[in-house]
Length: 214
Image (cartoon, rainbow, N blue to C red; front, side, top):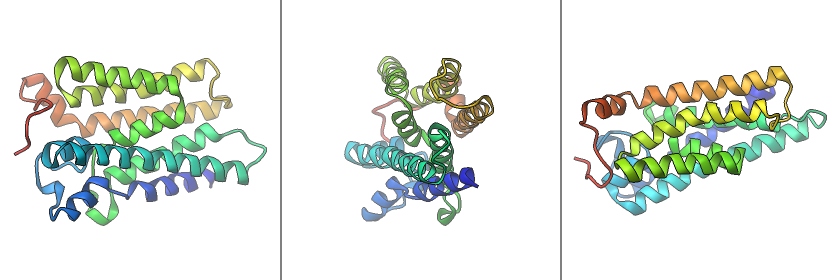
């Protein structure tokens, strides 16, 4: 029940579609422009750097807030169980599902990378730093935002597993397996959502940072 509660909380937070709301304020549906994705990169290319930054921060911190709320409620309802990290993972799962598949937008949302950044922020500063280096380094070298997003997505299960082996999460073995499973699921979902980008990278047709959306 606690796990379902955390996912539900996360999903509700995930329904806050920053780029869609920003676009509506500007009199447009961002999903009808550029890549058709309701995320920070498409907002950047379609509406400019300000929209991209606002979208990133909104999508990132909605995950942070959901994780914090889930941890608080879990600590209140289960004071004898130290499952804050696991509760946060379930909440982040809900946020990313809500972001990618918002029920009120016919399940047509984003790809969840900015929300994943919020998950990293809520998990650990070192994991966040590595994710930032992977993203910023790869984008600086190649100018492909999608490549940075893919690398960050892959780093999520790797980092969660490394910390689990080191005993950083303070969870029982079965609970660790749950964390691993969620991290792997989020990675696979992100890669699936980026399947067109992966094809573009492999064929040399992927749009680089700085190129305007059509």
